Amino acid sequence: SLDTIQPTVAIYSYSVLNDNYHIPSKISFYNHSDFASDFYWDFGDGTSSSTNSPEHIYTTSGNFTVSLKSSCGSRQALYSKNITILPKPGIISLTKYRVTKGGQELSSDKGTPLYMEMLYNNSNKMFSKIYLYKSYPASWSFPGDIDNGNYKVSDVFLNADFLSFKLWLDEIGLNDKLLYTARVDYKYLSDGYFPNYVYWESDGYRVEVYLDYP
Image 1: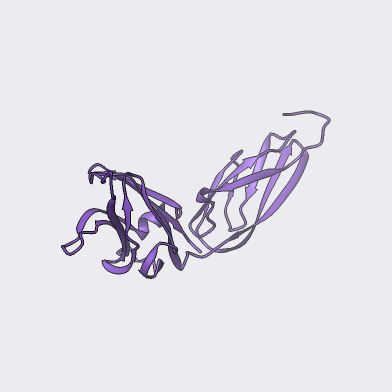
Image 2 (image 1 turned 135 degrees about the vertical axis):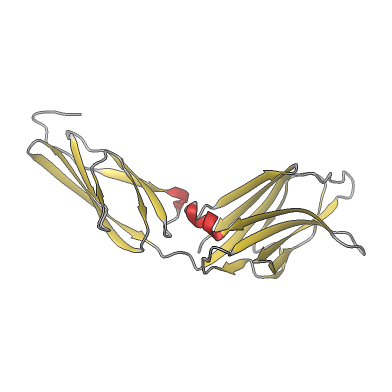
């Protein structure tokens, strides 16, 4: 609000998309200034904005001082905060794999033996433990539900790099049956500002993968 007597107050808050500070990091700024009509943002990385409540994408890592100068005529106020932006993550961790529905009908008595596999560029990284599921959802949490391998995947962020998640039916003494495959490439993760949650819905399946970037 504007007032011809009250002093201008500059203040803001912000939120980070996916709560992830790795570059590229997308931040929404919320202007809570009072008694001001004009605003100037300095994001500390050589860019600025005169938008009331802007969004900004950091593409370089470092410590940045974000300043908001709010003014009304000759009255001005300045408010600053420091934000630390991290480099691209060197590791991606699988924290949970969840199938909420699927084309495979699950047994109602002893249960259906299911497990999942994670691959990096078609190279196996780990298998989950085999569990008997009587109905969906079927889920595995990591690292506790790992039978072998490593649930962390190094990432050099080449566009060709990708992760695959495969859902298997364990056929004891026979060839196991592949039920569903989901794949996500690193460009998708980077373009999405490193989401902690990715899902697929196709072929009667809904598969959810939860990721972390330590």
